[in-house]
Image (cartoon, rainbow, N blue to C red):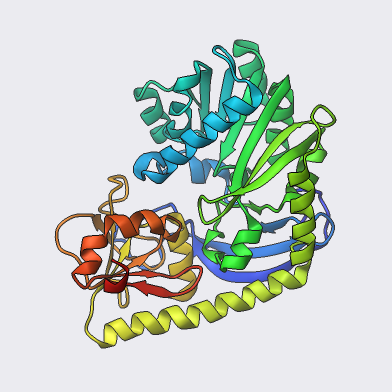
Length: 407
């Protein structure tokens, strides 16, 4: 394949998770086995720009025009976005009337957190169902794909953007270069683009292979992100790691030369070099660690089954479909998944066909926590359940069962 970032043909396979269904295309439980389409899920490393990426693209219109994920279902994300907004507003003197644009704005959770500033806000969301949730909540939202053409239309109608944000979306971009071109054109002369994306370094260190799925086309380090932005006259001037989604990079970006590059960028660059995040051998080791994780998790779940204990999945996030399908974990080991998102209830996780039910009523002996990145919130929420003998099994970063001792 040609590298999505630099166009190089020196992209080498580092892990093959087999053919898998689109993780967020939930299915009716009564469909015949294997009816849903399966696509290759292979991860490659570019030896030239170091971008890690998957090699198969499901068209964006298939993946994102109707979407079952909403940002506002946990307490963690709204609180995180409020803190981030306040920090950005203070750092860049965001005033009433300034324009803030959010890419892939989902149900408007982040944009709602800008109310304190008096800024004008605009979300751009490709999925009609969640864009409507935002619109119904009073968040100005365009239902379309964010790209260079969209940015030209925004600038024509609203003027330049003081702040552009992207959280949990920058690795989704099929039109990668059109998006970055649009950001560069939409930003005001002193504007800042703030991107939060799952950090590849954290994925490697946590063996978080379940972050790999067809919606996630690219996996960023500071080096590979900079290689992409630099092609469009942009540069990262501040970089840090934030504790969301199991570890994300937060990069602050401006037109090249307009803001001094801070020590945080040089420090992260040095740390990535030290840890080998620009070397293919690092990702080959990562692939081996995934196999070890499979052995440990399947053995634990088999132990519950042999003891006659029930195990349900705690939530049905996209990443859970990758883990379950990659490891061959189906209803024989995990009988059902329970969800608070009504858009998922009554359907089944594709491939493995684990049914999804509402989060209410009876409880199992143990839950497999597929949304392990929110485990701290869940440990508080389920303290009474654990005190009564229930267990929360976390597969990543290492297989662990939380129980009475942790309540």
